[in-house]
Length: 129
Image (cartoon, rainbow, N blue to C red; front, side):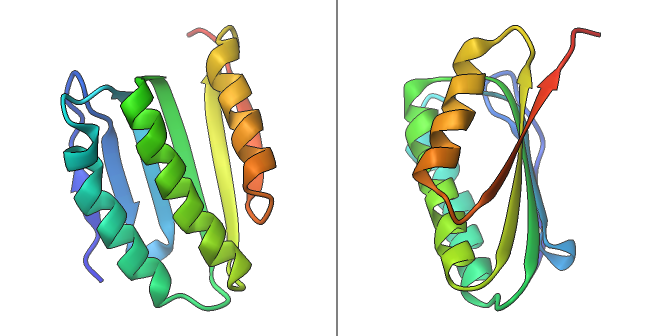
């Protein structure tokens, strides 16, 4: 499957899904005008990729400094697809990066790790540069 790369914009994150190395990353900020439209193709491609995986180790890196409520829903759908892949026998490690002073993003990562127990969540605080 062809890799998926979308350059970041002021309102959408960098999407770097390297299907050939089983590594997926989202970085930046996410508040596109239409989150469902922005994430729709990303989610479809991810689900298509995941449907072909068996006993595969997948690494996911999410480093979003800000995201709005509609992006949160789409992130939930994305992580749910990863959880389904983990339940099907794949190993999914999700690295959740948050600013060490941002309790909101930290708490969302903690909630997601509880909601999706098949995924190995690793929460990483990131200090100010």
